[in-house]
Length: 350
Image (cartoon, rainbow, N blue to C red):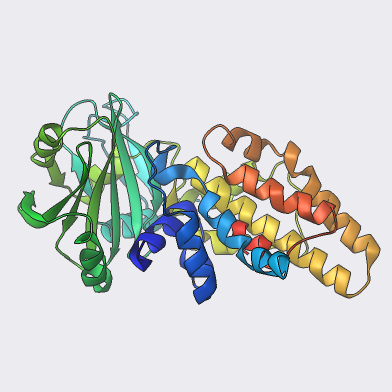
């Protein structure tokens, strides 16, 4: 497995992406590659919707030691949804903040112009990377975009999958790579500072993929936003959404929720992971501080707060969709046992 494979796995699994992978040293990278090198034939949700790979990365240091040892302002814009996949009635007037419009302007904004497809997951797109997943009758199609400067490296990596076949998507040139008879990817050439990779999931054939490629279209900002489910947490809704997530969650000292505003738009699962990861890391930091200062009362409070995470509504709601809660609880259990291996908290983005 190459570094590009690893980058994608960790990026898809972790709400904090580069902030975590950037802290893995060479040995950790190598071991993580070995851990996640087996083919994933049964994807669980969007881009795994799991942080299992990161959990593995987080314990790398421990393995070595053990073997010796993520309100509307006055300038809001009202638009009418025009995409069949939107959950709003056709005559509904939607309101988007300027921040949302600006974020959407920076995305590739590709939609599938065929009845039945709906957006089920949106992740990020606050800068030059992000992802969106569409589903229809058991088929899934992910669209991930990255900074254009990374195109050559990703393309070189995909050459190890198969020989490329030239295709076009809404007039844009791209290369199609075949992973298997039911698994395909298309890398589009860079445009406006990003490039897009389309990746199939579940019940596809080459014929059905080729057909869908012909109906993918680049759309304007209003059309794009109208296609997103109402559950998506956009920049203008972060504060209210965070309050709901944190309704029964004890907050660590000095928690700064303003950093969530930089996370772009996210579906509830990804947003829940961002918020709980921020809280969890705050409590881990407080626990470490207290232990070093020999402040047993503060350490006990931090431990109790993390232990209570098994009762947090947000994590229990998320548990059926992916593995983030399990990884979070693993960290909490280590704290409760007063035995947090060095680097283990990286699994929740600390």
